[in-house]
Image (cartoon, rainbow over the protein chains, first blue to last red):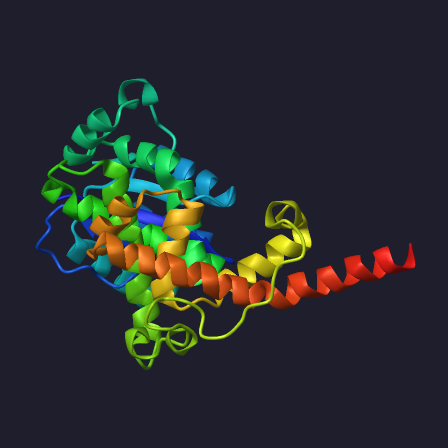
Length: 91
Length: 217
């Protein structure tokens, strides 16, 4: 299963939306990463490669929306996000 | 396995809509970045005109991309890609507006009472003193017009934005809003008259100012 992440900057925070390639999947609520470090950590947990994360961050810093293909499932993304919320020191 | 779509756009092979649609259907790595590059401004512009808030408009664009990614397999290409995109962004923006509204706007049309059954203004509307084209070139007039558009009821604002700002033909607007061409024309007519009335004070003031200058000259 693969999906797409679209990311918007909201002040210092980032709004991440996951889109599934399965049209029957329910659309999940967007996730909010409190800052760039949290976003990068989330993307790393999702298995994105460093160069694609760097390029996405560069897009966001220019005020543009970043769009990434993501190999992980929606459930995996949610799990990664939950771990980050529970262990902020891991950031 | 992951791949960025934001920066790695080789756009040479995606110049045509059909090629882009094929790439989108394959969930091609660069196709969605290309979609954003080609149509992102249009999507944002429509969302902003309908919602009035830049942050909300950005979120609607984001949600639109999600919908495109998820539903692209169902796009049968009978309509143009842009028409399909217009439909998604308009529906997404309207859903957001409906979610915020306590009462469905269809039930509270504030312009309804201002028109006769024949579609004419129920009362006299002030004449505009200056040619609109001339005045609208001025920033002040543009701001007034934008505010007036923002205050139109959603039903009329949607049609006005699609027809007058995006330049879509009536039949295309009818298709994407799932209403008849006659309904599109009626809503557009009412939107124009509503705007005219809303702008009457502004242009009336300009007329008085111009007349004052002439009188003193």
